[in-house]
Length: 97
Image: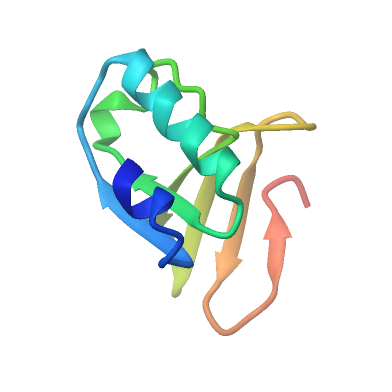
């Protein structure tokens, strides 16, 4: 992943990993921030959602009812985590209202 980001040939990098050591995740985060032209999206197993992470944004998508997706924000910079319901083909709304 680091090599792909350093190559300056990709606009987005999607990766799946179950690496659990915080130092590897921190190195990836620093590399992603250093190469702003490449968006890094790292998918990790649900069982690791309570583990610490240097990521700026951590989300979970789960199927809802009547064609909706529930997006739960576990961590984001500049605001408290929240649950958002996203309607496919419709408008988004907060779970609060």
